[in-house]
Each structure stands twice: as structure tokens, then as C-alpha cells.
Length: 69
Image (tube, rainbow, N blue to C red; front, side, top):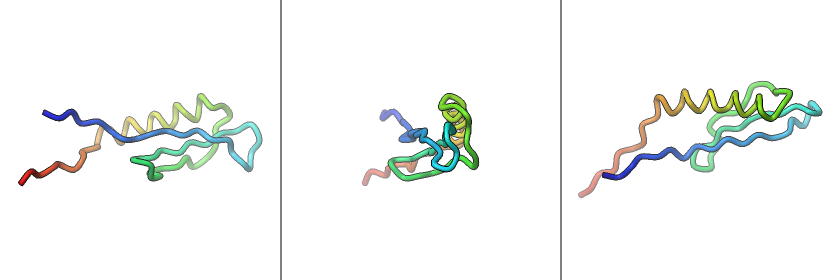
């Protein structure tokens, strides 16, 4: 049996419009899946927000099933 694993990553970046604020980006296999609507005042807050969104995605995530012929 092959183990299923997700290919999601979280990036936390400085907000270019608001000094000392941060935004998160959730990527799936290198493609942007979701971005934060606003900015957070710390990297930790931004990461925690992204982790909550990722938990929701993973709860509903079903990778494509491989068919062997």
C-alpha cells in the first residue's frame, strides 16, 4: 500500500503595503491555492492562520486515485 501524503506548503511573507505586517500563501504542489485576505502583525499569527486553513483543506483533501492497467 502506498502512503498518501499532501503536497501543501505555507509561505509567510512581509506585507509590502503595511510595514511590520505579514501575509500567508498556501501552495499545493508549487501552485498558489489560497492567499490571506488581510495581514497579521506577526509572522506567528500569519502562520497560525494559514495552518488553520490548511487543516480545513486536509480534512477534505482526496488525492486523485491512480489507475493501474
